[in-house]
Length: 360
Image 1 (tube, rainbow, N blue to C red):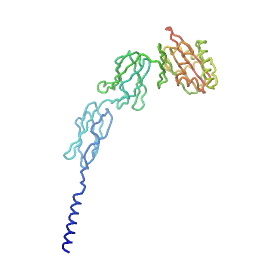
Image 2: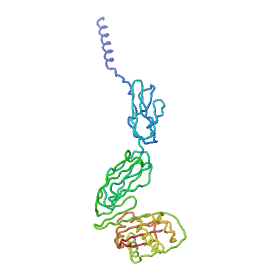
Image 3: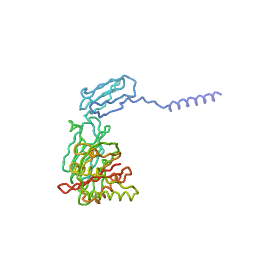
């Protein structure tokens, strides 16, 4: 009996020892910051927190002129005050944590760091800007390309780069007043030729036939107007009538009704043809919309559209360009339009300008 008890006691001791050896150790929580490096625009705010401890945190910065710190327990709110670099420190017991702050007027990122475009074509680059929306740019070779800004959408803006001649250029975009610290660089390469159509989001199409460039544009608007005024303009009748004939043949082939040639629209289109020889745009030389001309010619309408082009010398050629562009073709083939006017103008250099105005 004593032997049995000794054996049982030995087994219990071995079991207790085994359980002790298999116990899983529990490690202490790691004390850390949620951020260790922050890019912060002037005037912007961010939050830094200490986790892994319930002990009191002492906060301080290396440069209070660069960042302003507001403290609440284990959380610090930091605001960028002026450009520079500063460190935020968090001291817990005998441990000190730090976060680096780089403060600038703006932080700019680009959707592309380099673009390649054909002569006469455009490329668009989206800029995302954290900080100041007052931007400037430099162009190392203005003869190679031109640069223009679009409209802001939140913190994003679109940059349009247009090829002017074969070559290379470097575009730098920056927050005004801070060209060195905020600049982003875009390398531009412009090719000399292509032989295709190109269409961009701004309703512009460029076409190269192997020898010459042609540019065409379209615009459509749905409005309701009924204004009174009159004016007159000359009309190049033979070629403009031929354009209307081609339009109605295209529409008939698609089962659409013909468009009626409208005298007032013809006069308005003829005037617009002269205008686009000075400023090739759907915005008139006086800064108003292209459709404002319809008031001058006593045109009433609910729906209206405009196609413009230059470079092509014949009705068949300009119609071919318009029909090979989805946007221009949609105006020509729209069932919403019932009337059309066409304008044609040749400037002193022999360049041909064309305008179609549609109304319904």
